[in-house]
Amino acid sequence: MSPAFSLLALTLALSAAIGAVCSQINGSGADLSAFLPAPFNVSGLSCRPMWNSFILRQKHTITTILHLIFNAYLLQHSQNQDNILSIVLSSPYTSGWVGIAFSNDGMMTGSSAMVGWIGNEGRAYIKQFYLGGQTSSQAVVNKGNLLLSSDAAPSVVLYGASIYLAFQLKFQAPVTRQALLFAYSTTPPMNYRLTEHDDKTSVPFDFSPGASASTSTSPSSSSSSSFYPYELKRNHGALTMFGWGVLLPVGAIVARYFRQRDPLWYHLHVIIQFVGFLIGLTGAVAGIALYNRVHSNFTTHRGLGVFILVLGSLQVIAFFLRPDKESKIRKYWNWYHHWVGRLALFLTAVNIALGIQIGGAGDSWKAVYGILLAVILISVTVFEIAFW
Image: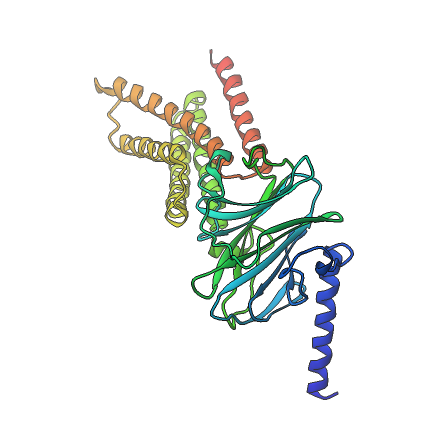
């Protein structure tokens, strides 16, 4: 078999696979020309499964071709001087809203989104929102940095069991690597106020000429970390939870309830606390690096973290300034050491719970830390009763 014939056969197989995948994900392989207005009803739109059941069709003002086989993508495209991008986003739909956002860093805050939904009265809506923060009140309708093309009005259509968002964007320069956010909610907006999303993801998309497209279908994949550092966020949470949320309370329990095992309790307490502090410190450094990457506006979480780090550092310094047992100031040192330590542990538990909540860590993180915290509290209760 000649190389040319093999290449032709592979190309035909790839094209067939693309059509099968997109047709399967899109239900019956709906013909866009049957229900979408021009210029979104043309056959030149490339079909690309993006995340869950989201499909992105995009076309520049000159031909864009996208091939998909398994997880490998090949993107070939060109743009004319108008730099107009046509986009059709489709997803299974029962109720609520579906959105796609353009972000500078892969984060929701500061991005501009196109959101579509079907109202209770059956009317279709598609609006641009500026996402200024994490709350519904900070998602401002009819605001944003996306410049909609005047050549075609945005459109949203419910066809079969899928919703289709179609719009054109005008750019000042050729589109290059871009972070796209996808999100949905099963609860429709009320008075143009977005309800909290049920799920979301960040996907890098390379529109630059000659570049191979690389997308991520899960927030944890490495390709999306170039926009949003998910791995760094996980490391920050895991290290601080284990170091300061688990080891430091265990070291405090040893110091309070096992003094009869002298001097073993002291050595265990020192070792556990130092190891826990160093692991937590590593997590704090990861948190600082995370903030430098994404510049999040979680001031309470960040402020508590800095204060806890100061308290922990003072405890370490106090260890090296520990007076002898016969010293007159030893009782004051003990009072300081005990109560500063208790305050640090309490604030750490609060800040870990806060971090899990604002970080959108999910139910698994909540369950794990809830179990760990319950075990620690039950143990302290049992030991305290036995102690008294």
